[in-house]
Length: 277
Image (tube, rainbow, N blue to C red; front, side, top):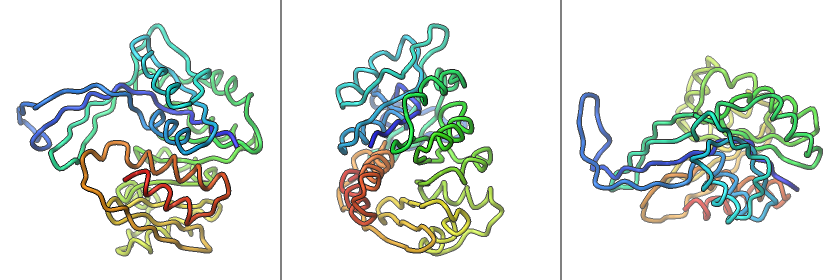
């Protein structure tokens, strides 16, 4: 099994702040750090660390070459990442509080320069038995999903950030992995009432997407799995939160590694919960 993550590569600028800045407020940050990031990069690294043969496809500017080194050090193949001369690498501005919570402002940069020609070149090397992992931080997502399904690939979608334009992709997804905020936004896009109980929310999404397995992450309350015939719950592993950045991406990569290797839903959820913690 090979996993191709066709996704974002970002430079993350993380500001340590006493609280999230409000409208009209000027706030002094305690520190600034630079990290590799992007949901695509994060999930590629998680897939590789979980034991899958992981490939990353995407685009960076010349300022993002160190991101390729990060991927390679984690065991991710980077031959499908294009370096563009006329655009900067995508980046994120992240505020992080002492409690470990974060909020993120995203600039797409090279991530929004993906072309259909690049998609065709990359997917030519993959087919049945391989998986495509997508998020909502690059261009050409509908074309990517359609061509991957036509080639017999398994498609996993993390609809983050969630927006109405993703709705045509949902029936193409074999796995839909999202958090509770994204699930609520998806219900709104679908014109459905938001169930009060978490289990009902997961079941409702699975019922609306009968060919898709839904994985709903709930932070400290664990995670839920629903596929129309079964519902499973996994408790979170209790730890003191230091920084929640990429915890959801880690869960996604480790869950998919377990599920795609046929280890079973419960095993994959426990594996992912431990890694995310």
